[in-house]
Length: 91
Image 1: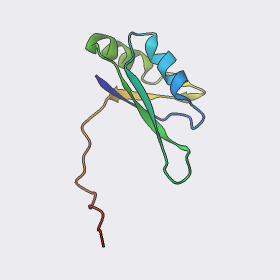
Image 2: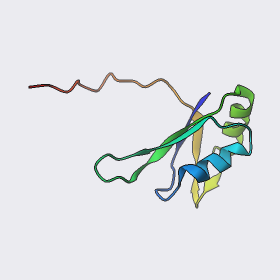
Image 3: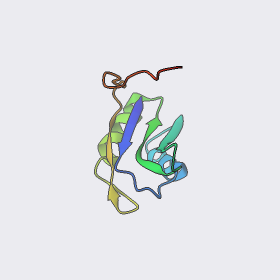
Image 4: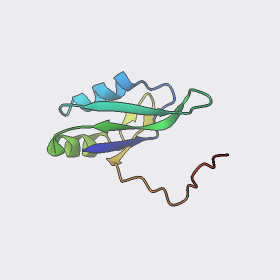
């Protein structure tokens, strides 16, 4: 299951996020989304857990819990909506 994690502190690392979720089971991948221009975290990321039961337990337990002083927003990731984006023009 792909899990969205929002309201991340900008100082949070992928290792910290992995440790928080590993308390509930196996973690396949962790990705904190970074701003291309500044290289700074955008304050959200994704965690992939292969077992839906473990993922559900992690979502229920970690949603609202603090990480480095900020309450996390944790829920199942939804498919990306590209309706508002325009394709890049090529010369």
